[in-house]
Length: 141
Image (cartoon, rainbow, N blue to C red; front, side):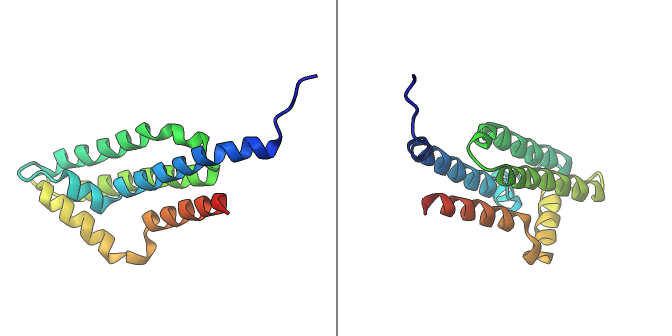
């Protein structure tokens, strides 16, 4: 008969991996927030269309780089991160579509930031951070 590993031991050993996954997803959430992206990727002198591509590609790359973390977190947490990624890409595309073809990256960035400032209490970014922090706290109890 095989010796079985007690569930509590297996669970205890997975806690550091799970906490690390939540940590990485918090970092991902911060890195794909629109203000963070704009400050990190701003390139004066390029068009709004070029900036749109830079912003959306960066979001996708960050997300893809961290996609394996879904193995260690709850489906609710992973869905929240995925929804944030999709929402940010949608916002960038919608705002870029409203600008004239001659708009600059600065115009796009300004419009994005103004949109975020107009809705400070409905930030999905903040809700995702709260959900990730809550679940990580539950693991540490």
